[in-house]
Length: 317
Image 1 (tube, one colour):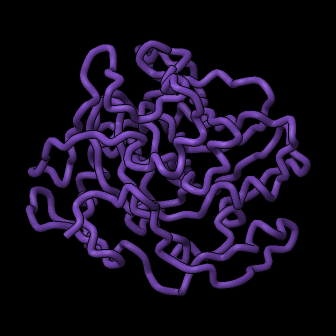
Image 2 (cartoon, rainbow, N blue to C red; image 1 turned 90 degrees about the horizontal axis):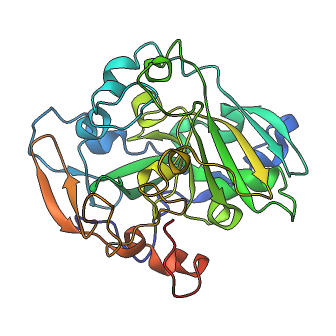
């Protein structure tokens, strides 16, 4: 059984199955991933807390982190600073309706409903199994449900002058107690950003659910971006605005502490965090099983993304 995601290629769990017309939005639905089968919700079966039985992808035989662990140990400071705050304090968070605005340097700006961005029923979205690595040096193996972000971005036609893409998360302090807390030093709403080349890379994933479940605000739903070769804070959650810019946007964590949260923040095992080594990581399989494994350059995707960072200087800050 392969315990670690293949470092040479991401896996497309479903095939392109044809076109899906969506009226005014048009080509958002032109690429339809799906063969009509149900995705990874059957892979986990909501494994009981503390179970040592391995959770295995029904598509590849690849081992996954138990869904319970992946949904009860999270960083989402919009809900609080403890790992259990996201699941414990997100019960009143409203996932629908949800709209995303595209603006800035693009030819076709506009605001679209989440269903338009998905372009198909949720159960037919593509599934990708990616290693998620936190800058705190812990990691999980998670099945994400979505579609390639570049397919969505291409529809709004970024201009040639667009060098960066900024992602703004929702500001809803009445439902997100971390945003309302007087102890939070973060400048809400949360903003993260990528270069246009990073955003358009086929690995970068517009994510609408995990484990076949789209009702998990603790995991950043209903819409987040997954960038698998970077540290987790570079994968923005609760996205409601996507803006194309010529100048580099200010990213929230980089603005908060640029020494510890680099703007690029690619995974380099030999570049230590100022307060701990990044050479190894704690792979979380379940509540009761955690193992120490070596970290891999670019989280295992060097062949696909190293060309984005030319030159001898490794890009982190």
